[in-house]
Image (cartoon, rainbow, N blue to C red; front, side, top):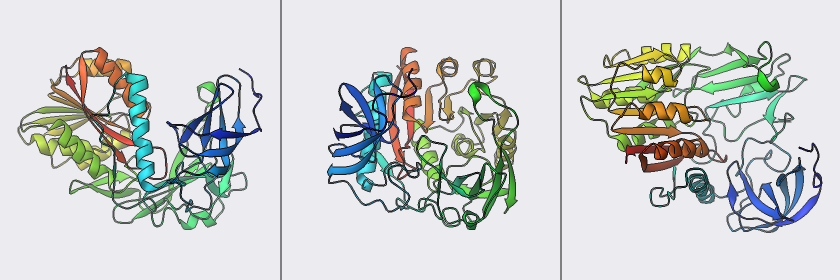
Length: 414
């Protein structure tokens, strides 16, 4: 594939078409697809081609709007725009338009990847409380060679220096650490819990190299603040390692747990398995629902997350957590016959082999929490070919201003 295609650096006048997964819209130029950021469907723009490696597509930024969509707004963030911070995708779109765009993406991914029309199942993307700004309770800021923190530009290793991130919550988006220099670090991370307890973590490059030249995971340590953060979901308290996973929108964990319970409807006395269970938020919700006569087994590969989950579930003897990777072998060796299987996998999804193995457990229903609609659609396609059907689908705007959307789905035997 060519390193430099013929359109790189060219300025094109384009009629913008439908939204694409990833925060851009699709236009056409001389038979090629152009993925245009900072545009909206129906607009006519002048766009600068920022990446062209040959082939059937290239990437561009809308640098001038010639005919604007009625849904276009002035971006509130001074760092949003062509060539600037890549953290947000839809600062130029109204709140309803952002949710409509995300709903279109979810439907399109299911049509393209699972060959399913989910229009009757998906009513739209549901709004979470708190608005478009000030919601993000965890941010990782990159650090340049001079030690100055900022955020990466889109599809680039270049860093946009900033003094504040508007989607960041108080003490996260305006962290005092943004005014300091951090020589020798690859990044700084600021995280807060429900009670506004805030932790600053330092990221240093990990040793060695991974396959395909990828960077190894950072070495992370606490600089200031508590080593664990307090969170709440469904009225329960959770203590989680400051650098560990918890939903970044303060209303998300509660919303997803409620949606999951509404979707799979666990009954007292049932047995549930919670895959990729993390610190135990969904495990706890399932354990309360099945009661003392039921049981829940969580599976998680992070040592610290398992320790957090074990402590968080101490008052629920019907719940237990196992330190294992979710693999077909582990699932085949499970010593329980689940009525309900729940999974909340990483962005890449569960994958064909894991999906096939969990369906072979023959639960009465499967609840799936997904942070990427493409991965969800691929895994649902695997289920459909295995004789299952998608019976429920909801989507939540847990990441306003960005292209990310969270889904909760239910699969039942067909």
